[in-house]
Image (cartoon, rainbow, N blue to C red; front, side, top):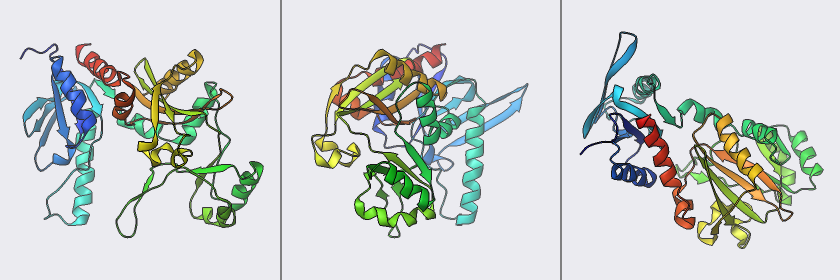
Length: 328
């Protein structure tokens, strides 16, 4: 096969990743060289060789199905890498050390390359902080809910009273918590019931994020890829289960393509730029009065379900972006 560029796309992901499947297939259809690195294969099934000389790192990544020179990587898609896996002979304390060393080796060598990242891992970490997201969104002219982060029961009660009890709780970071039974549970955004008002002393255990509840006409998932903006309208208000958090019941949702006002679309595009990202999935609300309210941005959000429901060409936009990285 003749490729369109000497350099290639490296996809950092795991074996079971349908999003990666479709992008890799589309890249190959365009004769763009692409390699998947299932990070759980390292170091048992793959190896890294890196040598610094003449002012730069050189070497290769030996995957189960190919040997990839580091110098040929033109774009890295940081999709959904999994934890490195080690043999059962390593005790836990040694496994923690080995995992940190593996992260330093793989992460350090890839970060040393002059290539396109979608998205760069350091930028993903910074962009995931909700307080920063809210500040940037407000600075860009987007409406933002009145919000409180606190572990003070007094401050929490005051905030709830200021908003007449119409307050939601949402997590600051991940939405999954491990249980004592090792059965993880999702934590969804939830409207505080009256019964919770007497239990606000519990916020002293760790900081919590509270926001005024925003009345919704529809919710919007805005997927930004490079300069492209793709907006899906989500009817989350027709079913009781999805009115506060649409993730509770995907089967009750209906979708449509939505055209954002130009200033809102520009703000979403600029939001991703200011976070130094190439990709971002932004959640907005349109109120019954027609106001657009920013909720949050997921810097590595899912998008295939949006494309499937609406036909928005998000996959092609990602492929275009990665292809430009290897042909620039």
